[in-house]
Image 1 (cartoon, rainbow, N blue to C red):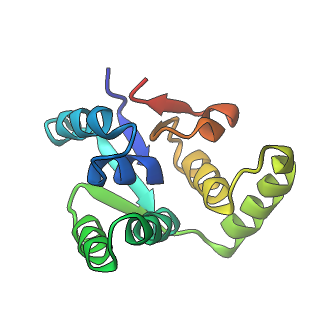
Image 2: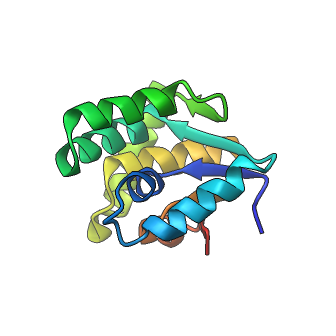
Length: 138
């Protein structure tokens, strides 16, 4: 079942674009189901930054730049912008989850998801489940 709104994490982009990724097939199938749905997709510039950087390192910089441009101009993704308060709250969460080595990008995502009332994330990072969000696809 597809939720009404979904936050896109770095893993869904990497898995879609990199055929050697362990979640590639699962991601490709999930992306296809999203394209035929009415679900609202959200992401942030911080996740885009992380995704493009990792794609560049794992594939090529030209490939990563093209992927980034495609996602950034997509009409199915709403890009959330973190405020200064959001960034400060993410730092508080980073301290809270310091024993779990949760990234700052993930903490920003947690703050933005909570602010928007988004409970589901398209990704494969267990840190989201630990923060009480639901991973999709499950």
